[in-house]
Length: 483
Image (cartoon, helix red, strand yellow):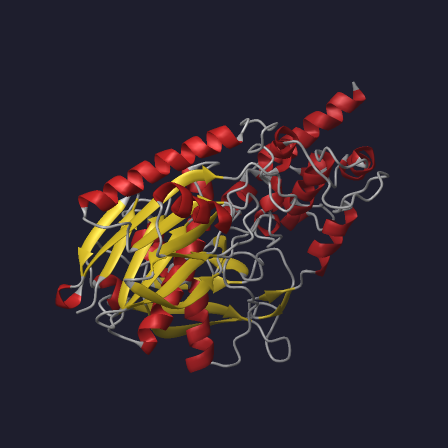
């Protein structure tokens, strides 16, 4: 018998596994379990005695007491010394858990599985397990790639029941939060879901009957896209293991605008392919399938395949999109018409000449300029100052916005939305000292004043950046400087 469970926003799980083996397994987001010492590698300044939270030893001890009280109560109700496996989220370091169990819970047989990720705040996930119930076979770290900064990894623990020899695989998660808005942060949790799904598939490929437990703080609900679509959960215990087996493939008619400079006229040709695809597959997967199975001459750019590098921007059913983040089911049609980005010179098929785009990008001096001496570590910035540029920093330079702009189509010298957005990113950066220089570069009818606020760029941006808003802010800045 195999068991697959997803635990969301709960603190305790008690589940009977195969052959009457009963385990007490608990998950808890303990919310900011920091020590009181400032770690220069982490953004933990507020959790120090002199920090914003006034985090003293007395307050830390009180938190330990409260945590221990709850864990003891759960254990007592289930006639256990402490949980067989307990997953924690938001723990700064391993010594904190050791102190909690030794001093406050007074557990003698606990062992800790801790991993320190690249999370900027340094709050990570960890297991504490009863060494009389389980033996840790190994641990594995599943990295989560998101587009703007490192985040917490997923921790996989492979445990073996010491009495009956059963293997249990536990994935402990703490996915990116919704700070900044649910919609704007959704792609981050989707990235975590993809990483987790890939790890599950890899495990099941080796052991189709593996007992798998998924738990942690997913920061999403079971009906959200990250859980339902990408993790492929339906609420059924067996569905996650089945993966895509029960999903019927769609028959697609894919028409691609092709161009081979050696044989085709300037207009190129349209070629149609018939293929099948999982509704949850991406347009990039469809293109790969056509190239690998039907026509190896098809050419297009791709790299990371996770909406980070911006390589595979193209026109899909009349809209500029990234092929790697556009799902087949979201097209809402069994016909795909794929073209190169409009307004660009085509090198071959879906590959366009990006040199003019990059030359315009270089024009606005897209890098920090300052006379301040180079610091030993980072150039710090107040959070309020960072808010001014935060949205603009998410640009991945895919070009979808610039090649959707009618002003770009009609005037090859127009800088375009992407370059102007990058100018904004540094003009409004409190650490930069070249704002006036950049304003002079963009204050003309080939720069700011060629933007007629048509909003095509906003619709085309795969990162949902309000580019027109940022360009308008630049216009106001120019006027304020003059008057």
